[in-house]
Structures are given as structure tokens and as C-alpha cells.
Length: 308
Image (cartoon, rainbow, N blue to C red; front, side, top):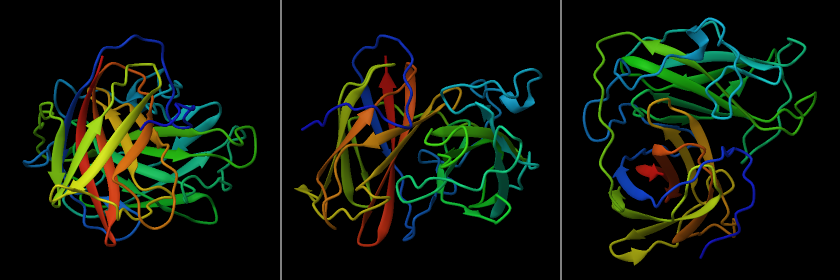
């Protein structure tokens, strides 16, 4: 049932041994029919909460001497001469907002040439520090290299904005980058605890089940199965050149990982089993967001994955 664990372009491993995994799935739906998944108030079943908590981690943007520290988890605004820049350090809570940013290259100039990855030149993610409020957006770029990500309403708290891209020219040609910056949504913030572990969940009438034993710093296969009314689902529609998109964020620091799909796209109907290359760099709890499309509607399920 598993595909080969070939290297993923978005997940980078750190050496560490792991133990067996406990899986938890908490459903959240997103009824969008386009390519962007904006999930305002995604909150593990309660009020969407914020980042002013013991788990919240200071942004490297705001730490002297740490602003441009390169990491393999997407937690830096700069790597190998490429930099994510934005003048916006806060966005109003409770209403839609545009986040504008630029990627500059080693020469300090805005990058305007990007390779297509899963049908898009830029994948942009917003996540709050307690791993609620997930949004996955494909922003538009102006001729001068300025990107605009239209965000659904943010709830008060600390958010991290991730830009995932691959330059198609220059020193970084063909290399995958994930850079991020922090943004504050002013207002009273309350943290929502991460849900307890479970093996499956329901979202919009679908039952999603996860199987696999990924370990920190090691490549392992992961299988997601989708069913409805007790029957395997075989009408998953293509989404971003695959049948499901899976993104993960680490509890405590919101480190980023993209779990690369290994199930090949074969026509307009897929499922019920979808395979992914899981390579999560750090032990602990990871919040996974699985996006899949049926009948023109994009569904999103949230999964808590314990990695040893």
C-alpha cells in the first residue's frame, strides 16, 4: 500500500530516532470551490484563539542577531541569500486583509521568476501559534515582484506567514525554499489546547483515517484513507496536481513541513487510499492539515500526529 520513500522537496530531515506514532484527527471543513483554502476561526472545535501563551515562540524577525538565521523548518525570513520581506508586522483582526510581501535574491533585487510546483508558483500559508486558523492561499504577483495574499479574517494573536517557492533562475534555481515572518493581530488572545490523539475523524460526512509510523528525522510512508457512509470514496477530484494536499506544523514553534504525495494522479477520480512521503524533522506533536476535493468542494481535516 505504501510507495517508495523518495526524497521530498519540501521536508528536510534532522537526525533523530523515533518511536511509534499516535494519530489524532480533528475535523474542520472548508467549503471553498477554488484553489485557496481559507479557514477563518479554525479552532479545534471552539473559539479561535491566539498566541499569547507559554507555547508561543518569539519570532526570529524580532530577535536581534537572529533575523536572518537560516533553518530547515521554515522559521527564518532568509536563507542562502533569499529573503522574505514585508513592511507589515500587524494585521487587523476580525476582517479580511491583504498581506503584501516580496522575495529578494542574493543581489537584493525582487525575484520575479518562480518555478511551478503543484500547479502554483507560490504556496502561502498562515497559521496561528496555537496551530489554529490555518489558511492555504495562492497569491498573485505584480510585475515588480510584490505578492498579495488575500487573508480571511484573523483572530487576535500571533500568526506566522509562510512563503513556499522555487526560483527558476539565479543562484537558487531549482531549490525549494520555505521562508516566514510573524504578524500580530491585535486584540484579546486565548489559546486553544491541541486535541488529544485519535485514529480517525469525520469532516463533512467523510471519515478520514491515517496509518503509518513516521519517526523524527527519518523518511516513512504515511497512508490516508477516505470513506463515506462506510464505503470507500473513489471520487476524489484533482487538487494541486494530486488527490490531496498535506501540510504540517510543529507544536510550540510552528515549524513547517509539507508531506509530499506519492499517489500518482490518474484521471478525475481518486481514492480511497492516498500515500504520502512523511519526513518530519522534529519529535513532538505535529498538526496536519489534509485538503481534498469532492464535487467541486474543498474539504479540510485537521490531524494531530505524535512523532517520537
